[in-house]
Image 1 (tube, each protein chain N blue to C red):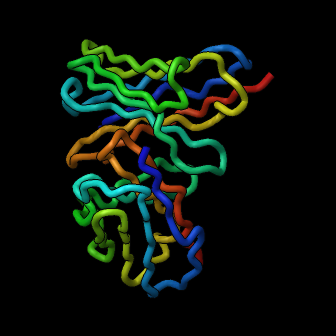
Image 2 (tube, chains in turn green, yellow; image 1 turned 90 degrees about the vertical axis):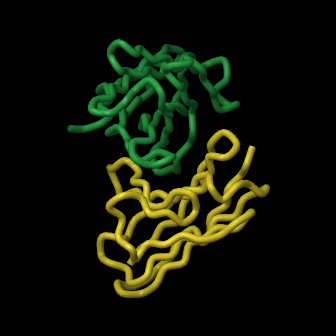
Length: 118
Length: 106
């Protein structure tokens, strides 16, 4: 059983928005932070933000403030990342991750490729 | 923001050799909140070490971590063919940041 399963690849136009989902299974969902990390082609890992579902509390990286919204639906154990005003620089693989058996990100989704192109 | 600088950018070694990877922080933070990840092409990162020196479940004991304050190290004793990958350090003390990565290549 895969703990985190993400939605499929997206192709978007510049200026549009994208919403990526991350469904948890086999693990307690509400009490643990779900983190979103992205990786542009050939680049390193970049933290986008996180949510603690039970508190609905969120934290976002400064560079995404105003463009990103992370939400969670406890009834379906699913977290969402929405990014607006997309540019080509947002082309990346977006990962969700969370603690499963340690204090940090030891469970990862398979990644969702978001491509932004006109 | 805590900036993490990894060195070297690339490490060229042979199987069986020892790898020593460095992660330096722009400010001191609790060693409880330093982790290391391995990433192979086309795969999600895999947690190796958390809390500076604790191996994640299933991680072989040839991987070890050490350090405190602003200087942290990941060591791999006796490189196996499957260890050639990119390694990232991460702090989760103040928000969350990653280092730029070190590629370990043959």
